[in-house]
Amino acid sequence: MFALRSGRSDFTARRGWLPASGSFVLPRWLRRPARFFGRMTSGEVEAPPFAATILSAVFLGATGIYGAVQGGHMPVMVQATTARTGFAVDEIRVSGNLETSEIDIFDRVGLDGWTSLVGFNAEAARERIRSLPWVESATVRKVYPSTLEVKIVEKTPFAIWQRGSQLSLIEEDGKVIAPLTGVRHLNLPLVIGEGAETRAATFVAEIAGHTALASKVRGYVRISDRRWNLRLRNGITIKLPEHDVDSAITDLLALDRQYDLLSRDVASVDMRFGDRLVVRLTPDAATAREAALKERLGKNYKPRERQI
Image 1: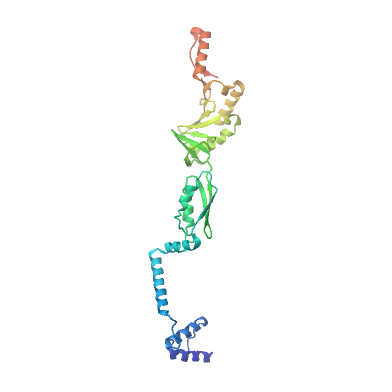
Image 2: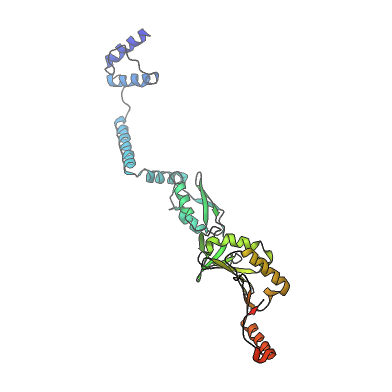
């Protein structure tokens, strides 16, 4: 070991690239480059042709890369280079979309015709796609050399929410998805009024427990954000109390079984009063009833609402 150190010290000292000292040994992987460099500096090895030109080109290239990195232009250079060497995105595969158009998805992906798959930011594209109204979640995956796969999960509409003349599709928690368009979702429950969107899920589930009534309901109307009215498909309005709704519905169905109440010419059934139920007839039925009562009672007739 001593002979190796002293021998290398004399050799390198003569070439002027290491001090003549026996206390320093180069790592093995540096010894060959060091010997080659020593021979070049001593004139034993001639530089290859065009070495200066090559070194200048390397220097200029390194300077350009450094400037691009410092100036934030490196991603653009990567995109431009890789797009023209076979990595330009030329296909997008979309799945999971029913309400969301592929055109809207393509727009959010953000391709410009020379977008390279190498430098493409899939996470940013995923966030842009998630901003679409119907999209619950999205995944964007690169498939080299030139394909993007986009898979989305859409939101599930629960009901149609009416505010004034505006109709919107909402989720079960009341969040608005998008305005109602077309006829695809007209079979969903209709909830009406301020506050109805956030309370509809619980109330609709409660009514669904009374299947004989639920099948007749067209709309659920929130009144002053305190109680509900039911609007039946035949036009009858059921005015429910603020509390103990389940008992009121049980009584209503019992009356319907006994008197066929919900199939008659009735405009509304008011169940807000604990001691009585008030039935209002349709205008035609009320007129016919008044005429019959007048004929039967004569001077003793007094117009009033029908009570059961």
